[in-house]
Length: 172
Image (spheres, rainbow, N blue to C red):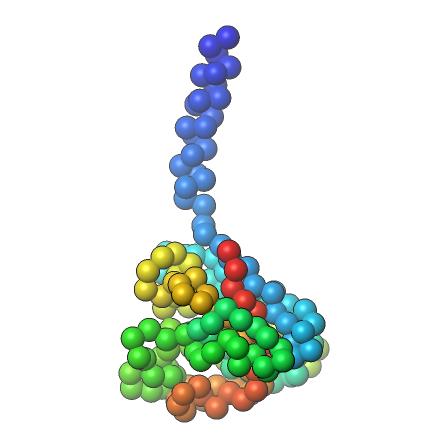
């Protein structure tokens, strides 16, 4: 009778380290200005940042700004202004081409083809799914947004990226 108990104890001991080492993940569902679901994102904590895998459809073709915003709210009736400004740590300026930049939430522009589909994998080294500075879950949470135009990586405070087309609240 001791053998099954010992076997279960050994199995638990062997699987516990792998469970502790599994990557932390989060999900986000994109909605458009009408509140319709248009895509999703999976966020995975990596050794040096967060990997964001996105898949959206129904977007206009062209280059679009792609940012993490400071508040975990995506209210279509506010044109997603409810998501606040770009996620920033310690008063950073906007843009990869700005002295004192970029915001922690500034990410590279994304490209949508004629089919309206956006699929991308982006690593943001300035944020975390864990606790502490850069956490996407501190205070009011965070949201990921797709903008109507390309970010110029320079203009303050948001890169002249235009209207907010799609928004997703980051959730555990």
